[in-house]
Image (cartoon, rainbow, N blue to C red; front, side, top):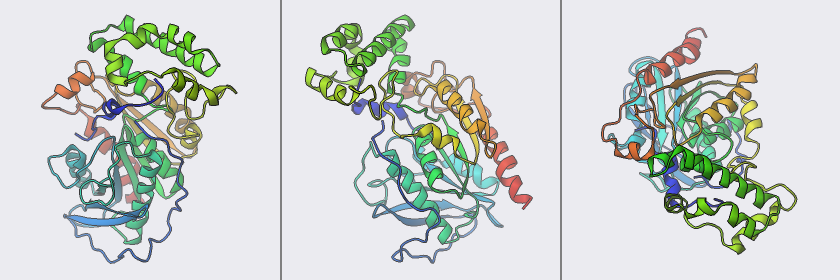
Length: 385
């Protein structure tokens, strides 16, 4: 309940087809790249070009697609979700092949790079890379691509799904020149592991009634821990939850008496840093609500109504209360009734169904909605410049 285990990898199934603590970086947007970086680079129209840039002392490697003919009207940075990456594999979901093609067709260039230790990028891969580090990568990539005058780099936006819902705002908060954001199945303030666990329970031998019972036990245990209650009370309040085989398999061991005391110790004053008050879920970005409210950007948020990975209703409400109330920003929200977390057509949206889906198909209108929004807010505004 209070620590994530390796099974949390299921949290963010690849969207293109867990999260560790981290504070936001102090990277300065718009600054020139280090002198060691080569600034002479060409990106021929209609071609895919390699590029590299420095971030946190590592050389990260990516690819940039340029539309055929003329000047690119914008450049979209594709931000990875949870898991590994291999941007040069045309068959890999992480290459975002179909999305890149559609963006190129309307005159928008795209850039995507491999995570540290993946593909041709330096470093050691960390599946739980802190979101602050991932956000710094976006800032560094944007800075470099502006410095080399990459096609469309005078109007940069970001696109990303799931975990990128934390990464993109971190980057935009640091780089005011990032002008727009497409969020796919974005995240709320807190980690969604509890939501994923309980929403999938009815498809793993449980029932909606049992999921509701377990949610009550989870909340009760969280309240006991945060308000100084004893370990015995905590165990009694969560007895059925802790005994369930599916829950144990997914979340791993529950806290021992010593671990319980360790988690509870900073809560003695009534405030546990980096955990929410409801289900004791991890909060990856401090001040996330204020961060969203401060973004003066155009935003398109897309959700699947059958998303059992992320609590999309909570995320939608968060966006509406922050971005939607900012007079310098704009927010458009689209919910696809038949779509799961990956915006694929689904019957249940469960993890079990997603993993068994050998031929995923995006919900009708998934691409068209994004293209229409971009033509209105990005491509059209370029034509009027």
